[in-house]
Structure formats: structure tokens, C-alpha cells
Image (cartoon, rainbow, N blue to C red; front, side):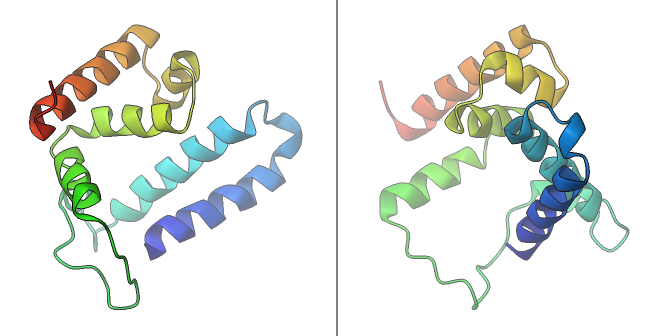
Length: 129
């Protein structure tokens, strides 16, 4: 959680420094924060492979009470490839496929395919027909 907060803070700081040149602040923030997280996790102390691993425990300072259904969905989301999780997060945040393509550096077609595959896999994992 702290890493995400640090990445968000850093992204906002960069946004304000570059305000005049940023055309889409929402997309810009998402992109910069995501890249900042990758940079933080690519350090020798925290290899990038650990980003794909799930935490073993929630820190004591963070008290989350998630309903059983929410925990099930989060568990299934963790089984999706990183690209599909990222696309689903951006779709959930109401970015258009064009904006998602710009953020992820892929084509709109790739975004559509990742979103479609992620939805199909989530339905399968959750037993939704």
C-alpha cells in the first residue's frame, strides 16, 4: 500500500511540474504512477518478479474487511496476466479503449482482445455463465 501511495504522490508532483504540457491529466497520472511502481519494484532489493507475486499477508497497519465475494473476485483477478489486469483496471476507471492503448503503449485492437479475454476468463473462474 505504501508503494502505491508513494507512486501516486510522485505522479501528482510530476503532473503539477508539467501541467502546461499535459493534455489528459487522468491518463497521464495513471501512466506515470504505474511506471513509478514498476521502477520502485525493479530495484535490486525488490526484483520485478516480486510484482507478479501476491503478498502473503496484509500489514497489521491496514485493516481491510472484505466480503467473501470481494475476496473471491480479487483472488481470481490475480490469476490473470498483468496486461489483462491492467486493461480491466483502466476499463473500470472508465478510460476508452483509445486512451488505454495510449497508456499501455499498445493498439486499440490489443486492448479489446485483452479486455475480452480477461472478461471471459473471469466468468470462467467465477463460474458465471
